[in-house]
Length: 142
Image (cartoon, rainbow, N blue to C red; front, side, top):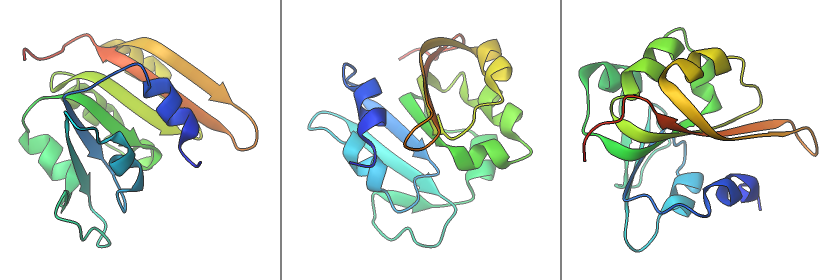
């Protein structure tokens, strides 16, 4: 299974509300759905057709603000944008937890400014992957 390691890191958690930023076609987002939670996916891509996902300008939506959620999931695509550090700080008061799965995590010092690391998994084979679960230092009130 493609997302087995990611799901293993999240296995012991039950998040009431999840926002998956950069959800793509929603494959991983669907795996986060349980009977008792709400999962929303945002993506800027045009391949988002399911009504559970929203095709939006993600960066603008983050800048404009949004309702706090218990978990925000970020894809590695966000590590490539200029506003990455701004996004990390901006969402730190909109979530209790942050989850990132990527092939490289060079911004760990920046993440540590706003989040306490809970789990950090580095895998070299069969493909290089870094998975991070962190708790916001600026978490919102629920």
